[in-house]
Image (cartoon, rainbow, N blue to C red; front, side, top):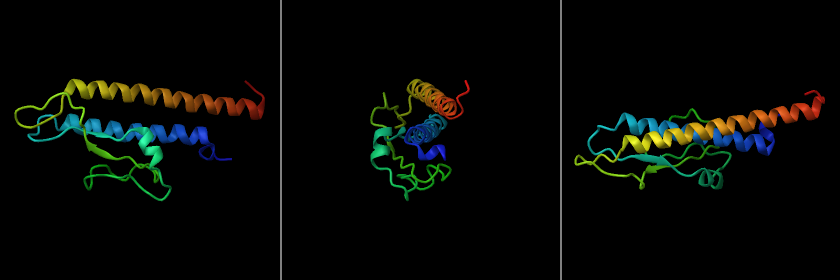
Length: 133
């Protein structure tokens, strides 16, 4: 039996894929923090990704080449301008490094939690099948 076919493992895996895509967008924001006119970007919510998830679709992007095809098919993550950006500088750049650091930390903690849940689920499945602790 494939672990991915079980809904718990599939959901945890999708969450980690979404977090990976979000971390990539945050890193691009930080890399462009001094680029005049650059608008901070963020991904759609995880819930939106689940609602719009179609097995045959790849990542939905608003700019060609923004997110590479490294994520598995089915991970429909939309990337748009971040309307929650704290400020815009005189040159039109809306990236606030402190805000990006907070988002990066949230992603890191969420990824750690999802990975631990995935691992614990695997351990429980192993115990139930083998009877060994």
